[in-house]
Image 1 (cartoon, one colour):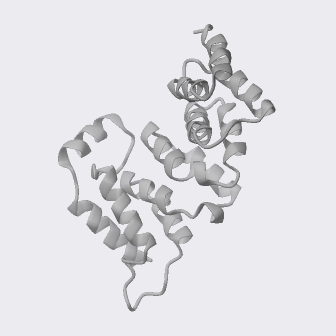
Image 2 (cartoon, one colour):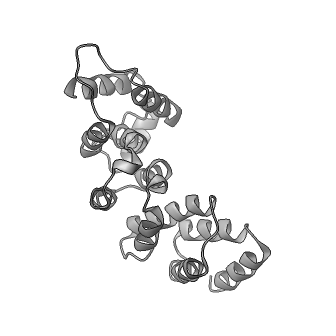
Length: 201
């Protein structure tokens, strides 16, 4: 696996964006940030998932093990690749908690929810748990995950009531507002309920 990770880092370094990297170092909490753009990361993740990076003499590497190793590093691009590569069905809930609690930046929270959290079999449970959390990043993860879920299906009556309660308590979080906007767009009745919540702004 070390050979594969080293090859990944070499590829990332080869596509380093100096301007983006310099800007991010000033504003985000990364030890290493090469500023590699998202489309390139998506391409690398797809190639790895399709086995295109496997070398003939190497033992097969599980995507779960690779994703965990990438996440454990302190490199922006490796953490994003970890979110893309981790098989959702193979991620235990306790590991998901460890990952979520270790997130320090809004960008990684966004990538985590977009590429992994929404795919988890327990995504809805985690979304509501995180929304109610006092930690700002975890709260953001909750609303971001629910944004993705709201685009996929309708909330049950009980889940809807809980969602509206959580939003009303977090109107200073832009992702709570985003989730409320998505919810409101789904029906006239939802729009009416969302407007009532938004009156507290």
